[in-house]
Image 1 (cartoon, rainbow, N blue to C red):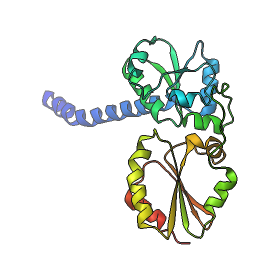
Image 2 (cartoon, helix red, strand yellow):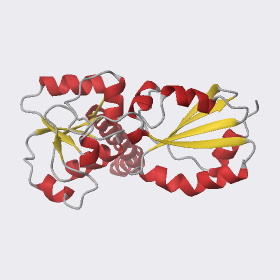
Image 3 (cartoon, rainbow, N blue to C red):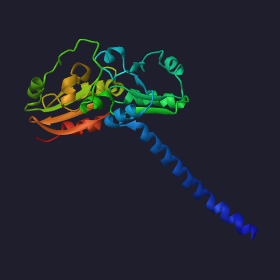
Image 4 (tube, rainbow, N blue to C red):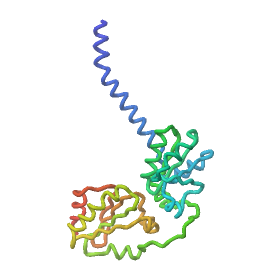
Length: 247
């Protein structure tokens, strides 16, 4: 009988361990998901929280163009970022955001690993916030017109060639990483396709109008008609497939 008990425990131990591991992973995944809030839920959570601390991890230049009310600026790219975070009270509730969600996700992850239990992220960043027509505090910088107007954009995409529009930002890591590949594709498909890069920091109204809430973001047009949207870092094979789209 004792041997049978031993045999059963040995045989069942592995599947029980795996089941427990799956439950833990799913639990953690669900927990992370609850800390990433949509723009509307982010606003509601701030309103319902006592003494919320809002952190804008964009650059001071970006913040000058408009930020959430009562947000404090701690630039994620600045060398003093970790020093500033370590000075904060870990018991407080924090609401972190950037332009599209990449930097705020990394900042929130750093905070959680360093003992901050209540850190909420704005999914899609301030781009999603603006696309939902939520209010911003008055900009401290002089508002500038877009480099590319809506009318100029319409003319740009109406072409007898394939047009691939790349919405990017100079500080975006994946955007920078793809620059050489985009240059290669531009040469490879010369005469057949046109690749246009649009800096969303210089074209905020256009980005909002087109509902660009993540970067890199690519829009494909054939004969002026939109054929597809592509988000994130793309490889050479994907670009070749996209740019070989039939008219």
